[in-house]
Image (cartoon, rainbow, N blue to C red):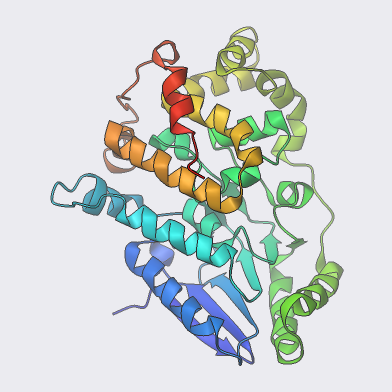
Length: 350
């Protein structure tokens, strides 16, 4: 049977390879459990100085959670008594990684979304390839950006934070460097040189010193930033998304229907769960005052709510299972969203 997670120790570096290329390394329950087991074994092993998350697929680091598996075995499975088991276990792993005793390095290339970001976004050093397609598209699936990534989205400038959080639109490698989501932007052919040096460094250094040495070495491979889609459209993103409410965002888009960019975004937003868009709009501001761990706990609360209302089931059904793109959300329109319910959902138990 094929191993979906492959672990190796090279010199004094522990390497965890995601190995499910046919699914773009989408995480299932088995993979989450295996990663936790490996990390726990390595954390107290004095012969291992750092951990590297990598992928054996050139197309993706990780496309997120396996939504078909989640739908069939948890959300749409009437015999499943604990429907949040997948998320609860995954989120505990993400919090564990965020507090891990040893340095973690991650290699982002190709698709980097959802659960893949949960594994890696708190890494001490993130290597970013030109091929990266970074996104959190959850509002189209009936929930909101999760795995604690909202904490990072809340650090983005307001208009861009709403653009990324509400629409789930992609960020490119240059964006990730510009907004401090990754540490070095490289040509893929230079990756092996950096990793070979990391293997060397793991024999000599540990902790913060190892990461500092790697950062200094990696600078020689750092590419100049390119103009991205976000850069080219930043003025429009500011114009439409730098507003005080979701209603005002819609109004700004409606008033500029001659602009194809505005028109396309308007219809995209309208196709999503309006309740979850309202949650995400408020969560952008709310997240500025939360720790990463608090953000993850809030994400689990929101996901449980999305399962309870049926929005997650309907979102995954319409986009992943039946692919009819005709979701029937629990709240039909923004006019029917009660802000008291939104605010209650965003309350964090301290």
